[in-house]
Length: 170
Length: 313
Image (cartoon, rainbow over all chains, first blue to last red; front, top):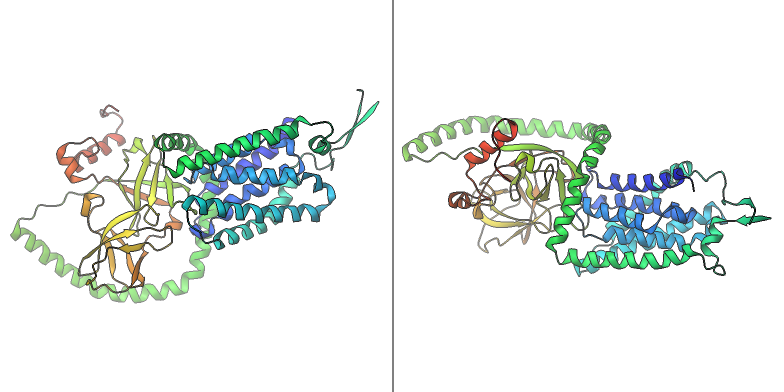
């Protein structure tokens, strides 16, 4: 496979993780949508081209974000791995059109948000307020409207929609 | 012979037992297990983990510094828009404040003169000045778990864990970890932050405790203490963790469960000053962490002048 194909997926996920760690001057309760942006990229690439996003890379990006945000190690790594799993499991439905893909992303965002909230609650051994997570996820959903077309443009395989090709031999 | 080859078919076809499918299902649970293990170790606050984490963060700090370059104009634009929106309200507030301060200026000068006279009479030992270094915020980790920021000054600027951190508005927090060229600052609003404070003119002692919310709590306020909403809160200097008299904020919320509206806007931090404040007791005992304030200043001079001898690590 051409290295450029990996580049687009790798760079976009890493860039969004870096953006999530930078000081944007946002109130802490409004910052939750930032680490959800890599969720959109991981889901986008894993749904369309699961082979482009290895699990170790998703894990590594999440771990680096955990380090940079000084959160518990493994938290965002686990959340991103769950996103990757959801996308890979729903990959057979990905070629049923744009609406289905958006619905799959929305479902994944809801599942990932609730998982992130549940893991954080277990970590603190108390029920945390779910609304910052829901609000952050909603904002990330709006961000997806901007992000997904950009990722689509960055996708080198967009011209061969289902990646079907005929090969001679064997 | 032609063969139809589809990437998705490779992934999902069960008849062929695709290696990729097997790969996903073996590696992913393993990594998830590693994540759970790391979460558990983080919860237990394992020291080896904290050390490894800080090494990685230190290694990443040049990347963050580079990423700050294109971010700066965006932040400036956001700040300008925010300032324009608040301009009228701010002007009114400043006019009122200016009137109030004009009368206070005369009173302050008079009190300053009286204080100088009294100090001369009582032969009070002068408090030495505290040296400081100013650094830029390069990463913000204010989320569900922690309220902290990373700054681009570390051991190379003689920043050490425990040093208080302020900005133009008041106390921000304290340094908790240092690397060669970066340090992490635990903000006053963090769950683990505890700061001894005094409240109002009566100088009621209490502890300012963060709870990861925007306004930290005041704990251990004496039952009979008379505090009011709007009373000033400053560091008490107790425990020698922070110098006495650093402004923090004002009492707010409910007096049954008082909170403090911080002067510093912790979500909009850009430049922070690290005070080279060492525990005077440990400085007197000559402990390595301590050192007198004079030596802190001298060390700072050394950091500025590469020709001066540096202490052994």
